[in-house]
Amino acid sequence: MGEAKRRASQGLPPRQPKPASKGDAKVDDSPRLLPWLPLSRNQADRFVSVSTRGAWIGISALVLFWLTVRFIGPAAGWWHLADG
Image (cartoon, rainbow, N blue to C red):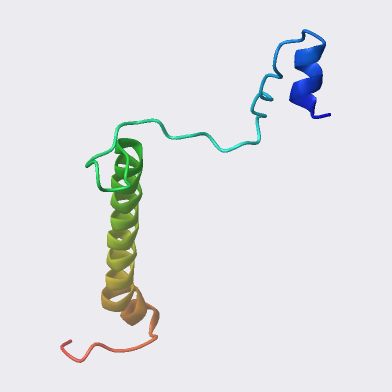
């Protein structure tokens, strides 16, 4: 006999689903940007924040590289600038 039939024959209510544990992934129930696009509002906001942070890291790395090539390297005697 199956579990559901046994419970019904004994007058017990149907089994309830197990509660989600803390380790389970959270379901994103925010509204979709477009009905046909599988991208939610939270995912879009997260993408914008991550890409903005990445852009600032890239800009900072470029400035650090430029300062090294233009000022730190020649001052340390690592190389000489062709225009100077």
